[in-house]
Figure 1: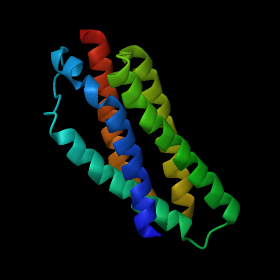
Figure 2 (figure 1 turned 120 degrees about the horizontal axis):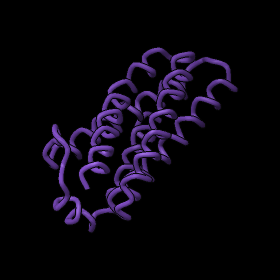
Figure 3 (figure 1 turned 90 degrees about the horizontal axis):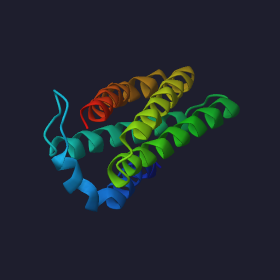
Length: 150
């Protein structure tokens, strides 16, 4: 079950990467905001974050908590994962930088909600999502920077 829980977000990330794989040339031509990391860093960081997300979902799924609370938490988790898939499609696939910024803000809010719901079931699960929240906060800064500079 742990492997499946980890595989789900890794698959989500691979899916969005596969869909946007041919659009990276345009991204390389854009004016980049300060602190933009090298491109090689993104897949490494996302792989770590997706793995942590999967582990967090496993702890919630296998907890002895209230079934309704678990269902609500995993629904929020699924919705944020769906938004996580959509963001790069809008940003890289369609070059909709301003719209992508709004998507990432909604994603951020869903991550916060998921952390809160996970915390009520498994504190470690909530803590495992904090690096993800920090990275998405940084990604939102970068996204807004792309809007302003391009």
